[in-house]
Length: 354
Image 1 (tube, one colour):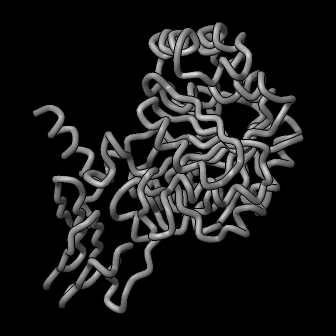
Image 2: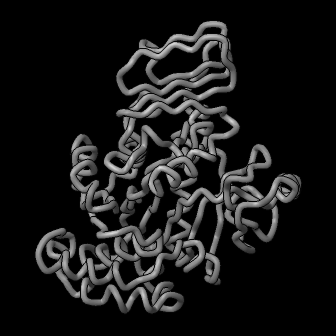
Image 3: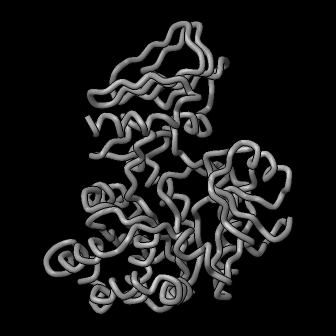
């Protein structure tokens, strides 16, 4: 049974403004110095020797996605969405395409905005997840927490262990006291948003738990694969009607919180969810004073420590600062204390409202 990567690449990434913006969100930027987040995600999946990649993204990022994926010389199907409707819609969209295009496959579903430093361990865990998924399990990968993080959702397993565990429940982002208790308990894991399952298994779960989504997609599911993937003509008109009709629901809430055949595999492969400017520190090597930048030739630090700089084109110099992030992109400049990085989304919302 073949494994097919499904990369979810449609988010706007507003907490990484101004580098990540509507016309070019974070998944198409080189934040690590080693390529865009989308290309890095695809690169570490080539070891699966997939027959194809599937990228689910917004219609406005279709061309960007094709351009990024062209380097891999593996056929890529870009499934464009007329509007964002969360991960349940994106995953059902991809699953129905695969049900038309191939015999039963194992879907490896990943966001395009993660960083993973230990590729060998990542692939070992992924191989294990694929084997479990072949037994009709809905598998997710839980990251062993290294500190009490309040910015991630958690997965509670029924017991402690090193291999495959039964999921007790999914837990929303906790306050700091609960995060500390989760870390101490040992059977709570960060929700990575990485899922592995057979196409037939996840479609069956949708039929049982989200039948309205399935009914809405029915006209599209009747098309042959070539027509199904189009973003023009009647297929696109069908997709616009579908995405206008369905509600926005995450795969966690719509399927994983309700299913009775869930499994979680605890892992530690240097995972980072690049959702804020502070989190980018996890993927960049610091200098002797803790300063970081993916563009060191255009960045200078004097009497500064624990600072990070991201620049699209201009030279940036920091003098006498600490714990600060500076971002230069387009016509915008952002300067923030690292501990306020989660507030960037509020800035974007304020700018849109004004």
